[in-house]
Image (cartoon, rainbow, N blue to C red; front, side, top):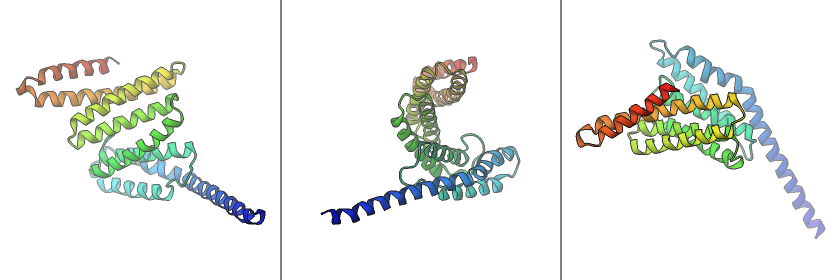
Length: 232
């Protein structure tokens, strides 16, 4: 029996070593391309944001960003730090595709997929640290991204629901970060952006419904919410 058990133990050990090696290789790849990916996805795109005729350059940014993400795709059991950066990278690519933070190349479907991947990962991270204000805050950001995509897809009621959930989560994150002034300020800025988008959508729906008697209350609510954001 011992002789039968020894090969199985050896196989299990080899499998664990292979898994650890694969995880290390994936994270090493991520480290190797992180600087280039950040340059393409953040700095370069921002540098051409206001240039007329920059769409071809932005398409190059997107192509390179996809290549980098293919290289660093997580293996089994990646570290929380690795997953957090993976989610951030997918969110940024979603921004570039949808125009959520500026110009876009108009690929809403892929943007939705990238945002969904970021939310999937952030949901896992939040489950592992449900009281962590950073985990709550980035999850709230994913809910706001989801609201933006749903709005672009014409699913306005679902978008309102997602924005509302994002605002609740931002409030929870700010409450958990009570002793960290810098974190609270960052969360408040992100919440304000989501609140402005929420109010803007309410106004859009209200304007469309002016003729059926339901528009006026929505327009008032939109104005009140926008006033609160401006006051912030």
